[in-house]
Image (tube, rainbow over all chains, first blue to last red):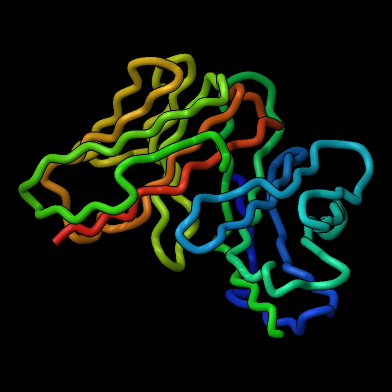
Length: 116
Length: 114
C-alpha cells in the first residue's frame, strides 16, 4: 500500500528566509508525486509534480521540490518566503502501475506560517 | 479560479434532512472525484467517476449517494447524516484517470450536521 507522511503539523518561517516543507513517501514501485496548496476557504491548488526525469521540479509561485529516491522524500522548498505563502500544504503520491485506476494518497497537510 | 465550481459553499442540516451537493467542471475533463476533508486527517477519497461511470467507491456509507449525469456534473446526495459527517467536501476533476494527471479542485462545501 502506498502512503505519504508530512512530519510537521506546522512550519514557521520569517519573511525573506528560505522555507522547507517535508514529505516522505512509501510505494511498492515508482511514484508520481504532487504538491498542492490550500488557502483559507478554498480548495486545493496544484503547485508541482514529479513524474520522471530531473529530480528538481519547479512549480508555481517560485516553489520547487526535490525528488530523492534513496531517502524516499519529496520536500517542498522556496528560496525566499512571502507572507502570502502562508497556507496549508499537502503532499500526495500515486504508485505507478500499469492498468486500472490507482488513487492518489494525500498527506495530513502542513500549515506554513510566514512571519512578517 | 480552477474551473471547478461547487454549490452550496456552506450547508447546515439536521440528521433527518435530505440535501445535495453540486459540482461542475468547465475544463473538459473526463474524471471527477469526491473527497472528504476533516481537520487533522488526510484527504479521504470517497468516489471516482470516469466518463460518467463509477470506478471507485471507497467504502463510503450508503447515506452518501453520488450521481454523475455527464462528465461535467457531479452530485453528492445526502440523507440521514451523522454529526461526524461534518467536514469540507471537495470535488475535483482531471483529464483522465492516468497516474500523472493533475487533479483540479473546487472550493468545497463546508457541511455542518446538527
